[in-house]
Figure 1: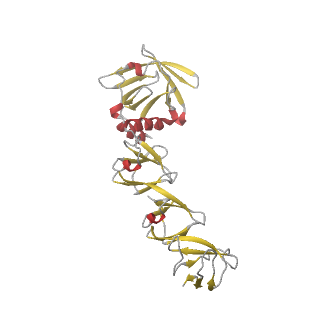
Figure 2: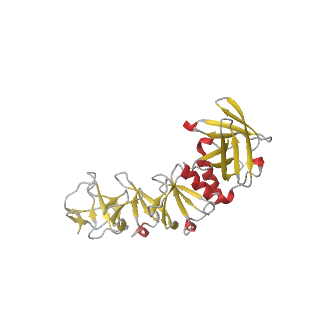
Figure 3: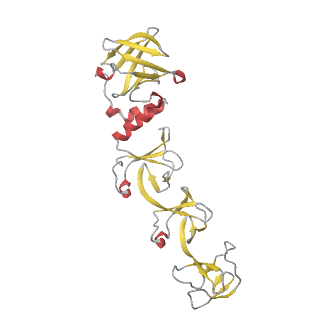
Length: 319
């Protein structure tokens, strides 16, 4: 926690107020988290009295502020502690216990959940840097600076990006590709900059897997040739992916070829499904799809309804 608090106080240093403005402290219900997440409540009085309450038991103490040292002295009767300013605003005061790495954090319990100070600090950071937060599929969040008013996804390119965990801890950028939680976007980051922000075209295979075509187009299918394809953000092995309408040939996690699945009624009864290179016509080399038992057939000549010329099939291939 100490490292996380230090990170935020450094990030927000330029937004910090000062305890010189005594109104920040006085007459507010401050909460301090102690050992075992026990909450101690403090009320600073204008006459330098300090009311401390814990589990309903109250004791009277005193406080004083030394502006030349930016330090707050609290006399708790049994001891005295000197606290150095690290970050101050109207709802949160972060102090460092002098001579240690430990923090003493005052949270205005009317405004801040004392048990979740990092959430409040993160909200201040997102406001200061105008951050757009994008939850990620595998956990964590991408933070894009100056991204909160971006209207077109291409405008994210070139902006500074950071990655944080769900508990607000900053994380190193260890991947190139980040998949949004809803899988609708793939963000590529290099050297802490967004170099690509792509909308994904999601396709469902017949074996109930959903793939992401990065920058894909659902309306112009052939425009997806050579597009990168991922499965939950991970590369796809060389293979063929069948959907209800298309077959995608994958090489090096890119779409190498796209075929069209067409179902025809046979004049003799039954159906036949063909994997076609062309969406509108059957040509030599097209393949009969025998993925299911719904379309049984043997090699030979077949007459199709709506097509005057029969097709000839040998070894599953139109000849």
